Image 1: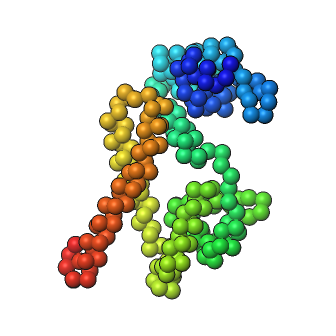
Image 2: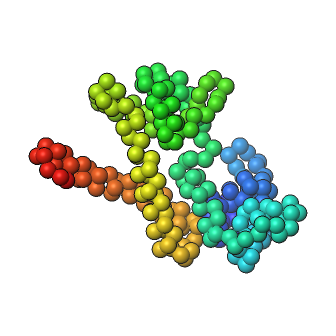
Image 3: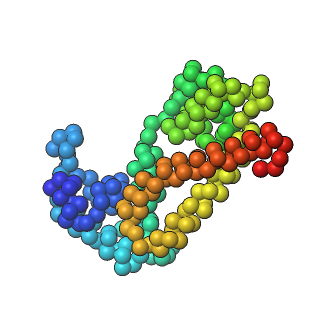
Length: 234
């Protein structure tokens, strides 16, 4: 059977099924062709068994793997209803198993890319990875360096008083806002929303929330500009 039929028979989203296969809880499908996959009753029964353990015993995927590996009930605690929400979101945003970007490649386009990357790494904003050809960045982290490079092209350079350390506060601000957003989401949902639906909601809403917050920032910035010009408090 094809993936669509497997989804219909089990009631489980394909993203979750792929996670279960990657985690070794389901066998790899037969692949008669490069871009084709065939599933069978083993997958249907395996998914049913896993979902039963998750619902009745509230076991997480790592706990189920431990049981199958013969480790018994060691460390079995009440599972979160969003056991693999992070993985679902990573898949939707394309943040899993992605290639890296050589820092040297960014350096060719943005002359300060290497020093900026070092500075951002020191502030905990990104991770410098070791590669065979030199330092590497994930696509997400490379985008941070690229954006800062474009900001530099607008005139925000060290010589004008704008070194990377000026925005060190961004990390703390991002953590504070994200922690509040997560607390509100999990507090409001109270596990009433299925994982796949939660992932779909967040995948659509998070970029919109960034735009919403960006507009609020712009409005606040303009108020502070006006206050600075007029010599008043914002």
